[in-house]
Amino acid sequence: HGLQSLGPFDLCLFCEVLEHLPFDPAWALFNLVRQLKPGGRLILSTPNPARFENLRRLALHDGTKDDQISGYGIHGRHNREYTMAELIDLVRGTGLGVHRWRTLDAQPSEWSRSAEELGYGEYLLLEAVAHRAPALYRPAWLYRSFPPNALSRTDSLAVDARRT
Image 1 (cartoon, rainbow, N blue to C red):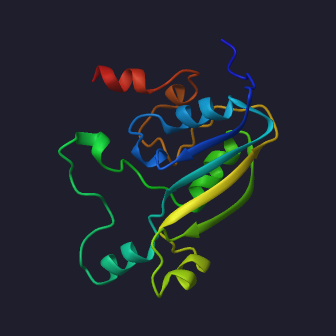
Image 2 (image 1 turned 120 degrees about the horizontal axis):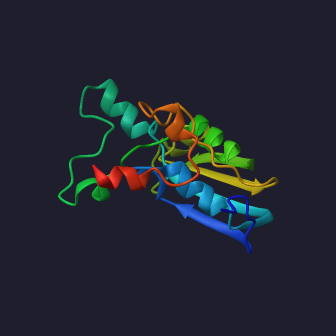
């Protein structure tokens, strides 16, 4: 089935979603990229696990970087937060060129500007451009314990996850 289609959109916003996907985030990203025209842009934002507040909590032994257990189950919390290097790898592997990236604090404080410049802002922002046909890229660093034949599938791994 035509996995390599190029879509009609100039721009896709994928904001504050990736960290919530519990089963197959690469499949979701691939399907968004398939909808971009050649030269189309993806704007992606997600929380930064290396944000200053997380580092402060860990350094002072004052909590964890992970979300609390939610009464809404896996959909009420972050399933996984990504580093900028991981995002760049995932986006490039899916067929996009990374145009620019940065960290940003949504509610700036006295420390924000220096934290952002050093890569410790609250959010990761990335702009990427479709410059080749999209690819379904499931890196081993993201799919721990999956057998190699599962990672080469051309459909969603979430179907199997719902059966268990």
